[in-house]
Amino acid sequence: MGISCPYRCSSQSTYLSQWSHRTEILLYLRSCAGTARQVRAVISRGPGNRRSASTLMFHLASSLYTQYTKREQYNVLILGLDNAGKTTFLEHLKLLYPPPGEPPRKSRKSTEANSDQSTIQALKAKRILPTVGQNTITVKFEASKESQLSTQYNNINLKFWDLGGQRSLRSMWSRYFTSCHGIIFIIDSTDTERFQECYDTLMEITHDSSWTNQENNAAEMVNVPILMLANKQDLPEAVDLVALKTGVFIRLVSELEATDSKLLPVSVLENQGLVESLEWLVTRLVYNKPNKQPQYK
Ligand SMILES: Nc1nc2c(ncn2[C@@H]2O[C@H](COP(=O)(O)OP(=O)(O)OP(=O)(O)O)[C@@H](O)[C@H]2O)c(=O)[nH]1
Ligand SMILES: [Mg+2]
Image (tube, rainbow, N blue to C red; front, side):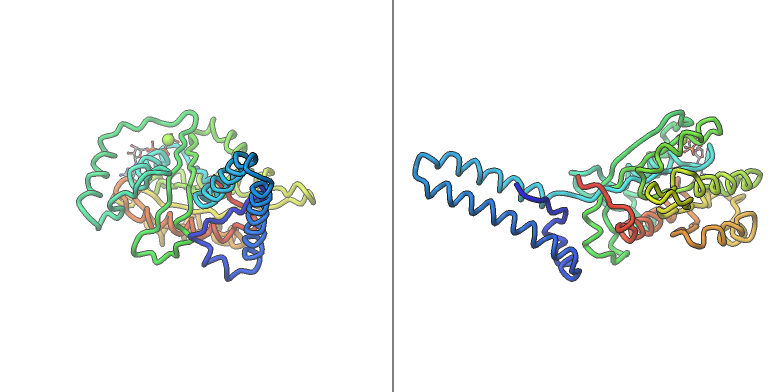
């Protein structure tokens, strides 16, 4: 059925301004035209060939439908020390964003409406146990009304991998690095005694040999965006962002200078800063597309 065009019609207007994408779309449309020509040729051979013509028509229509409904999927790893709030973050995302194919959730911001308070209550009532293996979810990303993100961002699925943060489990993280498009590293802002361990763990992630470029064997650093979340900001003992940046994490700023990274204050339990953080990550995943292509599902 010819080459496949990874772009949906709804986002063509955005892409048409970019020459490379326009070329790909034209190639795809040309392959569709080729199929249509085959159909015409089969019909012209006589009434006996009508059946094969309708089969070809069916394939053409189903291919167009598949291309139209295809979405970009990015894999995101959620890492951090044990007890940082990774699974709580994942569980909150589940309540805020629908799985692919379901209608949008009503409200996402803690300031927006009572419905959001009910998601916070639902989350607090849940018993979240320390993760031993992994938890995964796939959600349909939807930009909030306030964000002014273009419609280009409404064609995105995010697959999250929440991995156990206990010391004995951290050696398994690197297995997931080659297939991930972005990393969320969660820090417990109240756990001051383990800030150094957080820093060391983050450095190990960014300098892991899995990021090495296979083609030229050059030792490379992480090549995907890293979103660091200073979590549990709802608690009075939490260290705020300014203090975090001037403390042990001051070296982090220069270490990650060349990396697409950001440190943001959040409370994943109370839904403070969660939506904004995710929107930052999505813009960076899309920006990094030339380096790391999404999957098309
Ligand atoms: N107050 C407050 N508590 C939080 C927040 N996020 C997580 N917690 C609590 O922190 C504890 C640990 O949360 P988890 O989500 O299980 O932590 P984790 O990072 O998944 O831990 P591991 O699975 O062991 O790696 C739980 O009791 C959560 O309720 C937050 O934003 N505020
Ligand atoms: Mg967990």
